[in-house]
Image (cartoon, rainbow, N blue to C red; front, side):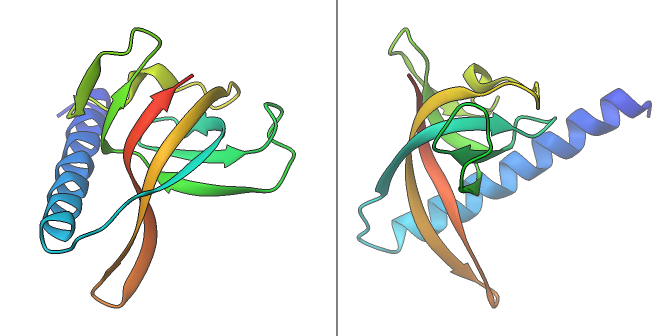
Length: 121
């Protein structure tokens, strides 16, 4: 398996696990996602972001997993998270204004904030 194909397989596996964990968690709880807004800088795979208050990324921020999150771009068409939120891209040096719906997840002794939806503004 070549490197590019292996990366895509790993990204697809991470997205699948994230969707399964999020779906299971949400189905077993009555939860309302918190809404946060800011400038998203993606990782190279586009599966996670660093969210900051300014587009230069120098302000205080937080990391979020976005793999598997439903998302919409400027066209306002909602998409499932299977292919990731492509509106944020994979250029780690650029940022996109976004709004996120996030939930706190605890599983197997670990906890994190996971994006269940993302809107590129």
